[in-house]
Length: 181
Image (cartoon, rainbow, N blue to C red; front, side):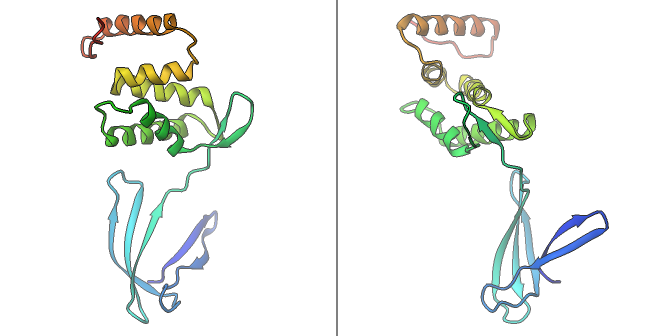
């Protein structure tokens, strides 16, 4: 079996090129092992060159069309998962939130944005998704993020937000109570 990559066309499969052995450049290999990632988005393949028997790893993943973020000032930039994650990490600083929770939340946000939007996503939609995830993860991180996101100017805005959280918490018996003294 040759390691080729291809493009599906209406008439079938048109070969675009070959994966070559990184050791000797030969274009024929065999797949020794294939494993799917936990989330099912990537396949890892161990290959062996048919000429020199050098073994190497390739990864196959679904290529998504790049989403562009439409910012408040009408500029556009590429959607950046790491930027979303950094904002959540900053909000959770010195809080009992583990990195895995934030990593999963960032992945979920990006997946939801790709599902909900074709080419462009308003920055406000990203902020709203982050707010929703942080509300479920940690109430203090939620307040921190919202206060920066909405650019709070005074204490009354914090109090109003916390009172709104108390109402939401009372309506949801499974939600954690905010310790307010």
